[in-house]
Amino acid sequence: MIKIVQRTVRDVGAIAFLIAFPHFVPLPFYSYAIVCFLVIWFLLRNDGKTFRSIGLSKNALTAKAVLIGMASALLWIGFMQFIYIPVIKHLFVVPDYTEYDFIKGNILNLLMIITAAWLIGGFYEEVVFRGYIQNILRKRFFKGAPVLWSVIATSILFGLYHSQQDVFGIAAAALGGLFWGILYTKFDNNLWIPIISHAIFDTITLLLIYFDRFGNLI
Image 1 (cartoon, rainbow, N blue to C red):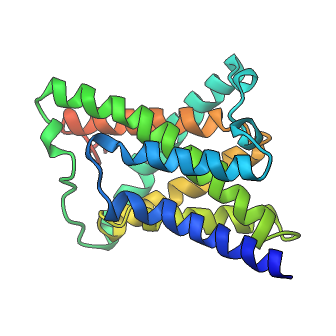
Image 2 (cartoon, rainbow, N blue to C red):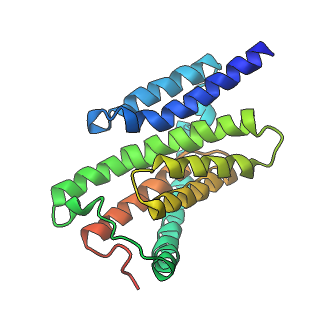
Image 3 (cartoon, rainbow, N blue to C red):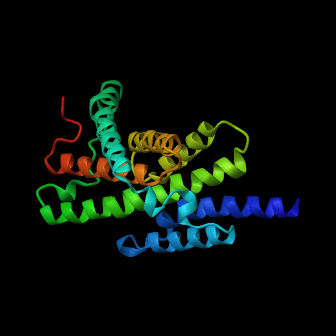
């Protein structure tokens, strides 16, 4: 019983740390990711596991995984641009999205942020949320329950992780988390698929912002 309580406290603390640390200890140049990766590595090692255990295997990075990642990214960008954004703009007064305005007309800023989109938005966030947190929730807190419960819980946490954005950005992040969580589960926990999908989605979104077409395709 004591070990179960200790494990529960450890897992809750780890999840809280991974969500809060990047916001409350804003290290420069996304270097918080290094700290969080080391934490995940230590926790996995403590459980006798590696990053392969959460789907980050070299053998899983296949042409099929890349194609699925690309196709799903295009599907999700279509949903956001043609359904989500038009609907919320019709129903609510939505403030202009200005977080990445600094890339407009500046190709160097665009290239820098696209690089970050692949390393942080795609790789880092998917390892943390789908790879680690979703697995922890499924195996520890929703054990025996339908896997969708852990996917939903992770997507909510993923939305809250984007609390620096407005409520519509948080909702969009939660929906994206749900989408990538389902992808991860559907394709046998191959983490490369949501990584590629997420990174390409972010890249296209940044290009739309750069060309001042974000949310204005229709």
